[in-house]
Image (tube, rainbow, N blue to C red; front, side):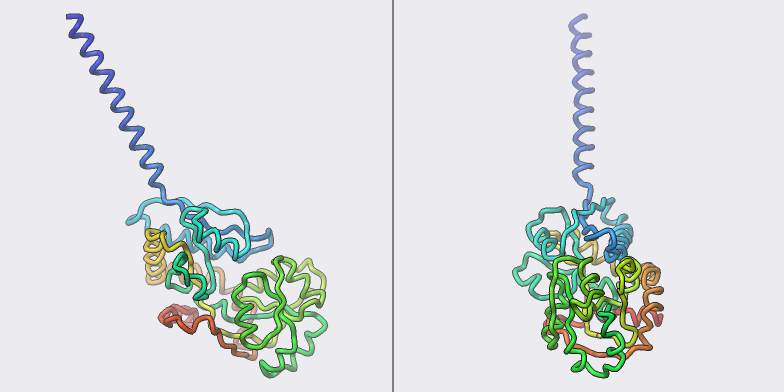
Length: 303
């Protein structure tokens, strides 16, 4: 009798332990299955460039939760674009997603790939320039790209625009310091610092403490500059999820709503339609199919 009770007690204990083990396995597998997405931190406290991109990633991931499950976003340490691309190639951070202007060299070795949707809807290719205050009045008289070429242009290390501007005959000076570019321009060490039409308002407000910082109000440099999300080519689930989320949010209007939330004030600030347009070519996109242009902002704004 005692033996039977002992066996029952032992059986109950083993059943209890088995239940605990299975529960722990389930919990561990659930935690392991959490979909972690890594995104860039702003380079400086004044850097507002990543705000739209971060919110867009959240929108895209939320749109795909029913099909793909929950997720968590993590900001990686602040770093410049070349270092971030290097980190993506080596998979230093899980599912690292980078917003980059297209350059076929990024994916030439097959380690990085882009998701075919222009996340900024093309607005970045309209460039408004901060200017050396000593030449601001002279710029009002410029009527051609050739006349602009006598002025030097500042760029950050690893910025795609450097290659585009040089290919069009401009003299470009590079610096590793993002905030230093605004100080250099205000001090006259470079003549122009050209920024996206979606960037210049926020940057002017963030760096207005720099004495003499000013911007041109007469022209826009315009070239095709599609900006995509890049990631390691092995992140197949991330690629599929982001591609699906971008198309879904575009089609249901939520991406347009987010874009206008950020860009309406920017477009009002730069007054594109009141500026002279100086068109440049972009040799970096010669191999790129143009199907992304169906999502460009002129089509979004007109809808």
